[in-house]
Amino acid sequence: MGYFPCAPLGPSLAVSLQLLSLVRQLFMRMPPNTSAWCESFEAYLAGMGYRVDTKEGICRRFSNAYHWYCILEISLDEHVQQQLQRSACPPLDIPLADPSPSHCSPYSSKMRPSEYLQQHCPLCFGGHGRESNNQQSSADVDAIVCIDACFTQKCRSGQLDDPVNPTATVFLSPEDIHAMESEVDGLRKSKSSINRRRDQASKRNHGDEGDVFEEGMKITASVLKGCNESFTAADERHQKASTQFFSDTGVMALLCHHDHVIHLANMTSAEEKQHYALALIKALFGHLPSDFHIGLLYDIGCQLEQSCRKWGFLKPFLPHISFAISVFHTFGHQWPCQLFYHPQK
Ligand SMILES: *[C@@H]1O[C@H](CO)[C@@H](O)[C@H](O)[C@H]1NC(C)=O
Ligand SMILES: *[C@@H]1O[C@H](CO)[C@@H](O)[C@H](O)[C@H]1NC(C)=O
Ligand SMILES: *[C@@H]1O[C@H](CO)[C@@H](O)[C@H](O)[C@H]1NC(C)=O
Image 1 (cartoon, protein in one colour):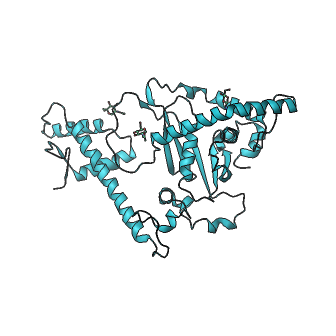
Image 2 (tube, rainbow, N blue to C red):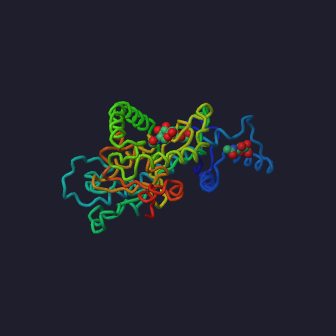
Image 3 (tube, rainbow, N blue to C red):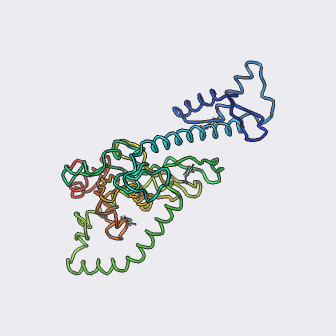
């Protein structure tokens, strides 16, 4: 009848689909606030002589209707996309190993970036696969992505969970993030004694304060130390994201260089710990063909590369990553560091 109910059984409120569509458009363009919307609506109705007759008002029921209406709309889009992909599949000249409906053979054989990446940024990942890029010089990367954390996007502890939302998400699952955290801790523990011995040996050989090139690095350990110090100083206020008051202390994002979100990770620690960035990078490579080369911009790209080489993080992907420092931050780094990590150099 053109109305969306607030509950699947015995609804006591139903909202016009046109109104829901209007609210959805509005909430895409301003901070969504259903209680403000409902209060205004009740006042508007009251002004026309209609009274909402229950004490609780319409807000809770309206929110339910609105939430599931949005999920219906998103599911519809997803369904249409799936159907389009299925019909866009080329004729099956290669026998399909995995005849799952959402995958065409060229994608599942990992010749190209995944369907997910192609949808999130056709410009970066939708091209004609790797072959067409081979004319470029080897210094060129196939795509550039960047990572940064935002500590203003917090979530208060003890707040009610979001309502069930079965639609596709760009957020990494908490399990993936925890898995990376334990991998990082494990590698740090198992390698710390080896690294300490090597550090002592190199100090003995070179005499001074460890001004040496660590394995695989183009800048010396002392320069990296300087970068770390200035970064920590600049970022000290971020440490104040209290885990006491917030369950999510912020969000870390991986975007392509057209500013399209590829993945997000909820942060639950007070500092910008490395495993969030590592989990995002790992998730990205899960969608890429094995010969794809990524340029990675990060505020502390030099530190991240050092950690990866030192502790063995992201080992299979390291040859496919060129680290650099995001351009707003790069001038805060040591000069020798800028020579290698400044994106314009
Ligand atoms: C939403 O609107 C209500 C009522 O106008 C207001 O009290 C509340 O602070 C708003 N919430 C946010 C997150 O802005
Ligand atoms: C991430 O945090 C947001 C805001 O707190 C929440 O809505 C979302 O469900 C969380 N996602 C995951 C995967 O934990
Ligand atoms: C940077 O310095 C801090 C404190 O001095 C230290 O805890 C941290 O491990 C250093 N980070 C790297 C990547 O070396």
